[in-house]
Image (cartoon, rainbow, N blue to C red; front, side, top):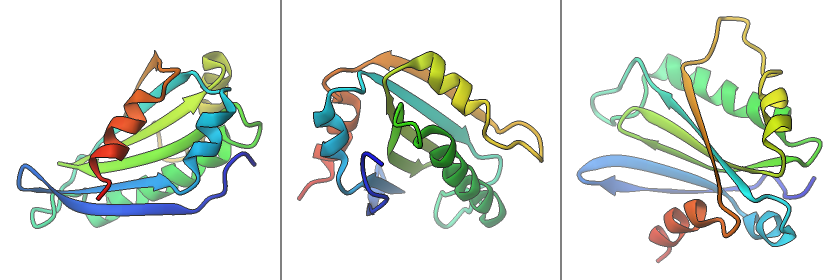
Length: 143
């Protein structure tokens, strides 16, 4: 595996609303490999929200965690893609993924189990050879 599965979590407020950002501890190994020029962002707009935290409700949060684990299991084994960040804010979970081949990523994404129906996600992709999408968020949370 290109990077280990150790994650760092940063929590705080953004415009008075709680935010949680998790990222791979050793993300530089994937960036420095130079094999991941495509940035894919997946957004899950929660249908439930905990009013005290702004995060998805507990049962939906459990579904999101299962999706996160299935996403890594589907995308990372062949080292075509690496999930590097997850952001939770205002009822939206967003994953930032870098990949080499978008067609392969789509095929791998199609293998994520959907026993309970399709996931409420939106997927966008852009070329980002400098990892600007990731580094803008990462640099904003550094002390």
